[in-house]
Picture 1 (tube, rainbow, N blue to C red):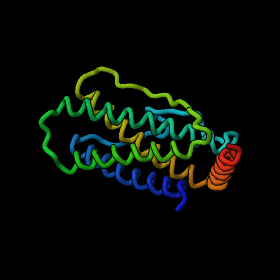
Picture 2: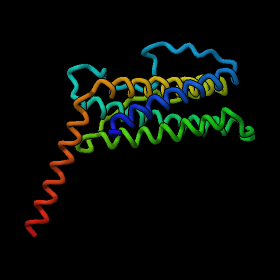
Picture 3: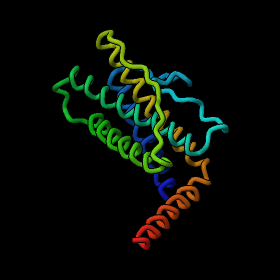
Picture 4: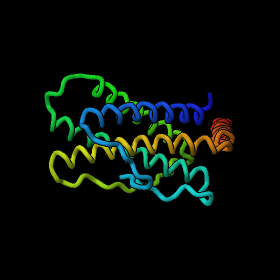
Length: 183
């Protein structure tokens, strides 16, 4: 299975797992999960047809990296608010989502052409008490759901990605072999 296909599968798995985590969180905190399209904490430029596949991957990678940073921060805040929380289904699912998001960040990084770096914007937590932290954590989880789905959808529509990656890999192998012959 090609790296792109594995990354798409991982993004779909993360999307499913984080949707479950979001359900567990909203039930536990008695919050409603009424996500409004376009209200993400993490933002990147629109992934329009004017962007190359490499640029799209770069921006998705940046968004996922920012989501990982926010999730780590959310976990830290949550653990500070509830330091003696027992190990339950929610905490296990949170750990799974965090690990899968880390793997997805690594996987999209391997798809980057030329190790290009893009940036994503993120709205940070505004200090406003425990309820504000809970609502912010809800938004972070909604962002992970959104960006994992967006990653799967976008990568699925980039069929030339595999050929592009294979060509780059072959060129690198040829250059390496030529360099060894010259020595």
